[in-house]
Image (tube, rainbow, N blue to C red; front, side):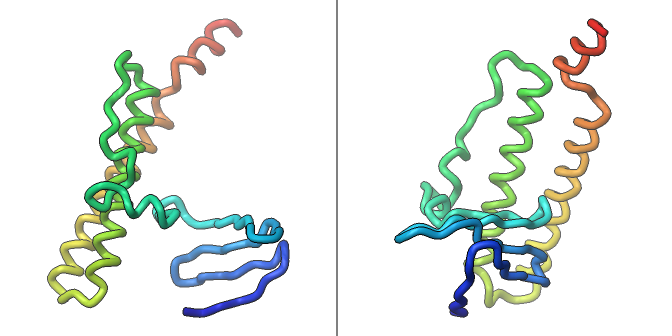
Length: 138
């Protein structure tokens, strides 16, 4: 384990992830950190990894009852995040795995990223109902 001392506003750079960790503030017994990373890099608090079956506690969420497009988009994004977190945890547990396992995990990750991009692009193409209401009243 690498142990570093940092003062508020100082950063730690993880160039291969890529991510930047910045000390926001520190008090007796408490440090606030800011983490900048690409959207495909999952960032977990340790306690989320201790949920049932190793998945985040929100993994059993259900789709919105009203069936709204924004609500469904939010639901799908949450489920994609849960899958990405689960895959990351699996990769952590299999750090010394054989090349076939790594290749399979890489393929799953590529499929998740493709699905995430598809959801994001469909969200950009389709305006929310709130945006439509604003446009209609203008």
